[in-house]
Image 1 (tube, rainbow, N blue to C red):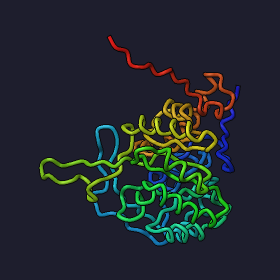
Image 2: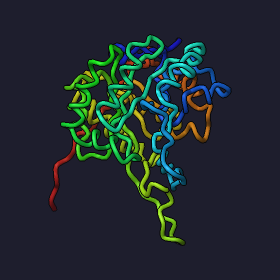
Image 3: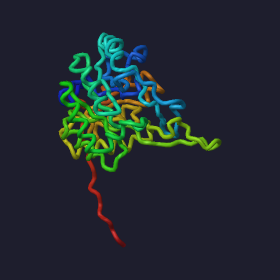
Image 4: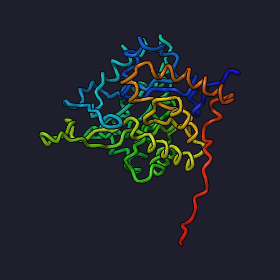
Length: 314
């Protein structure tokens, strides 16, 4: 039996559900020596802005007990260099490209998206409204449902491409921001971005990150991300979802799918093993065949929860 790994997230058709997360896979070309880029379901490139951005001062990254803390500050080459220098090569290599976009203001987002327009070499636009490592933009949009809705409505008319909104976990109820994004025109949701964290060098009593706080990613956040995917799937059963957070094995991929994700994005693990995402495609096919799964899409949202008992008193 050969498993059908293809998935559809609304208008976005992918050859398989294994994608890479923005900020963890460069622009894709940096990994071309480690795996064939056309093998992946999609590549979400580093966040693009109107002009090149140098990012935050170092130190930008530190390891934690179960993951990584980073405050890169959305360093990138800018949308013009991406379209003229990087995208043609990605297209030649057969990559399915998701353009991740960010800005300090609504106008910044609109300017980048209008420049991309309906470029057929780009499969979808992903709005980064949840980066905790910038002073402006970022969580200002992602944590406020009203601001998020206004931004999504503003950019929705700027491109005919499928629109993905990347949500922040740094909220009380992620279903509120998820619903705000969808009601304003989002086609797909990706969740979650990093959790805000702080690591301290106790010898000099200073933060280990130059920005002071940073985004926590990796295995430590996976149970939180899986829970949030499950909550959003229950609240918005028909909305396509990318699951993100601490994925390192094929079992983690399947866990996200069962929780309600249609596809996943692999992030921090790419730093340790740059060929991992490609191997996960093969391992997912093998797992499905071993478990009699004919179509990987059949796994999505199949979690069987147990009834929660009421309090007992003795």
